[in-house]
Image (tube, rainbow, N blue to C red):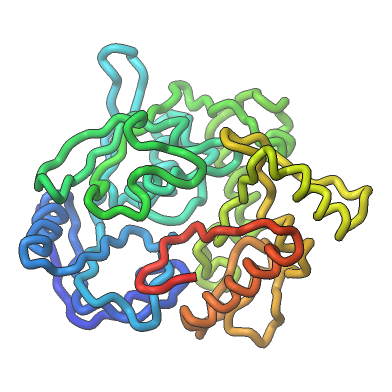
Length: 359
């Protein structure tokens, strides 16, 4: 059943996991794809600025809010199917489905494939935009296709993964608004078998050799426990989870620049330090959390009296301690970003989408 609701001057803070941000001129809630498409196209016809909000886990909204209409995606349909050509199982979910609810549903139905991405906050529609990833798996590894609303043509169409430019925490959909994700289709494994466990921390916790597989339900439970220990599973009573998850992406430095950066790190921290590095398509990936902490920004920085501080469990998360403003959050982000650059010559870039504000 198609349903929408309209409110005026509604603060958007409550629609984000950071719980900060000012009001939109109007807020419309859409509980299915049809109403979502109709409301977006109607706003476009009226030349009304639109902010599409799913789970709000990757948004930093200015204290001034958004001078337009916010459209909350609350569609909730999930369908399982089998590909005619390959015989492989898949699941297709509306953009508004809470991501972790989708992961739980696939496991409950006897499938694997999504378990390493358990506990990630936000909506399903946001996952290909950000190419969400954790514990050795990215959405790019499991994506079958994405249905989008093409706002310029006013039509719906399906897009294959190879057309999306999926890369580390980004895609051709990110920072662009002409294509709006309305549904996502993902490949599954039968027999509740997990994907290959490539992340050492997870495989060790499971007691499985790196590259091995396990029961998807057991992997999901382990991932949720690991994430909870880092304050990365939403909990209204835990301010360490009042965040946008990892605020900075892991920086990728060009291969030619890596030796100089490595020497700079060693000269500051000591020649016996082992710098964690990871291979990347276009260079070498460093750990943002490791760099932040070694630059002097410890867990809980700048202290318990601050409205915004680094998580007490994970230095990559900037957290709202209950009454923070976006201005305070961005000030801390600049402090950390500039401190890492001064210490190591490495630039950190924000992972969340900044709405009406800049870093």
